[in-house]
Amino acid sequence: MGITLLSFIIVLGVLIFFHEFGHFLIARLFGVGVEKFSLGFGPRLIGKKMGRTDYRISAIPLGGYVKMVGEEPDAEVSPQDQSVSFTHKHVLKRMCIVAAGPIFNILLAVIIFFGIFWVSGAMILKPSVGEVREGSPALAAGLKAGDLISAIDGVTVSNWENMTELIGASNGKTLEITVRRSDADKVFEVTPQLVSAKNLFGEDIQRYIIGISASGDVYTRELNLFEALTESLKQTYTIVELMVIIIGKLITGDISADTIGGPIMIAKMAGDQAKAGISNLIFFIALISVNLAIINLVPIPILDGGHLLFFLIELIKGRPVNLKVREVAQQIGLFIILLLVILVFYNDIFRYKDNILRFLKGIF
Image (tube, rainbow, N blue to C red; front, side):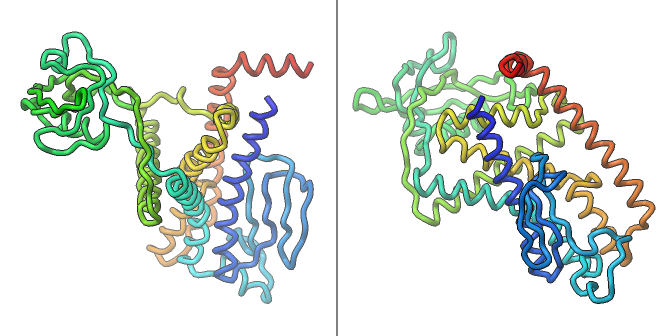
């Protein structure tokens, strides 16, 4: 339990710091005064005031905030402070300040992935056959466990993903598959079959397969500086794309809301990754950092995405959104967020009720 709690604090602390530091840095870059930089909400535990800014750690660790001079549209700003007031800055500057939080979370993921790829290289899953299913085209053609697929229709195959893409794009056409077996190359003619399967989101899809599974053998490919950066950008983009799709499917109901998790789920996963090794925990931080960025960009009032929406409307119309409209929207946004908080805590408690009961028994 100690490792889980410590891992949760580390993960949350890193994510919150980078998010709020993004807001803070761009605010200061544009000359906006910052009154508070807080990790956590609620009462101030410890901190230090430097210049105008009170840097603090607060009691409730589930978030953080940067309080800027003149942040609220109806805030009274003295004439001498108008030059450092958030509200008095051009709308494009305000948009940059708000967007900086999520952008810094994405940047954190890129930095982490870059470090992993540069130090450890890329782990490549070999196109090596682990199992040949009964009644499959591969079995009928003569493929065996242990075969290493090296080419399909003369196209070199370097990894398992590359191999599945070529088979999937066959449209059922008979393929010439070259395999390495006992230090000799053999060529087999295999006709992929169309089957129904489930994708990552549990949806029914049609795809072409030959009926083999991976052996799980991997090799490491060392990457130079440029290759590591390229792979880190690709990895981050893939996670961003996946997260956007998931949010869209949650909104449309294609994915059940039961799958959503909250702090307890993050704590459990952080603990599991920490036990598996520091590199796993670091990778997990990058993954959650991207998730946090995309969620914050959803155009719900209160979230960064909601503020960006208001500023975009202001940019188009040439004047700020009516204060009353903003207040009503903020209340609706708060209501939505509260419902989501209740939902994720309910899901977490239901999902981990046995772990929670054991923890409570250990205390009492």
